Length: 89
Image (cartoon, rainbow, N blue to C red):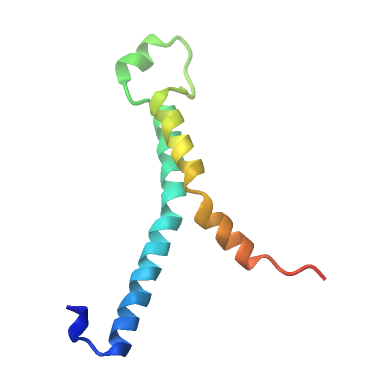
């Protein structure tokens, strides 16, 4: 399909695809962090939550997995922060 497009339109499509991919990459880490918080707060298994004597944040398997995924997907945010950091005088 892209072979039939003019060169300018192909570049426009590539730029749009790159921006969409960048947006998805930036969305991953906060999404996983929210999933970790919600899983820890409300639990993935209500039965397990009822058996635990203490209310509050439950750190279980899924919560840890979401936290790790959030950390592993921080690279786009770190690149963005590094790119926008003002130069030292």
